Image 1 (tube, rainbow, N blue to C red):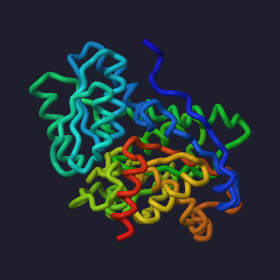
Image 2 (image 1 turned 135 degrees about the vertical axis):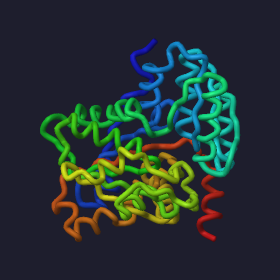
Image 3 (image 1 turned 30 degrees about the vertical axis):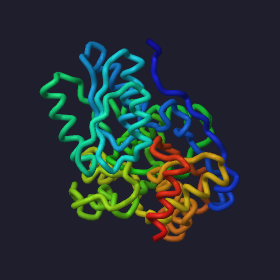
Image 4 (image 1 turned 90 degrees about the vertical axis):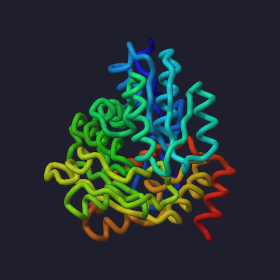
Length: 322
């Protein structure tokens, strides 16, 4: 078995984004992973630790985690049952089936699907793969920063890291990666869309809260509750995590601009992070004194996404513009 399932993804410099923010912008292209998102880092690591003698795996997912779990399970010759909510596009169902997974559609949002995945784990004796809330996942995701540090070399330190937040798994991994790299003081701009903003709601409330519903079209950010570890990191005086929220329209605009400028199509969940640059969030944070001016290079994690194609993009345009 290979040492790990993920690739060391390209770190690209974006001329268009750099011009917008007045500093070099590096893109960590997690969209280039075999399953199209960063999720394979943590899920591959977790499966290698926990699932080698398993009867099979189950995972609840809006798309990306399920695809990573089914890919890893296929490589490990294990059966996979992926539970997805009705909000997941047909495209995701097809991709999961192409990986050989059994797909079960349950409930309206991820939380409903997760309840079913936990039930299956119990009655069928399967290995449960959490989508974002597990220390082994964060350990795996931390490798994204390890690679960036190796690419940039010892003399270049990012001015800030920009990423999207769903359940908080990537955020936890990035925090751990920054600490390991000796970059704990680098600010993290954590971006969500309005209506899928469980992290922002927790930060504002000063405690973990559960959203009533997911109303954003960025369904892959669609956990109603952020993981406790992500919230704890947001409260730490050792770290500087800035929680920001953009609209679905801003995220969509970012997806379209990114496609035009960088020739890569990512899903709306990833567009949230890109919108930090395209919608002027970074410049505003500098004006407010929350990010330094001038800013050292900006690292944007292009978390990717499997649940998008041109047809899905057209649907999003229709829904969001109306």
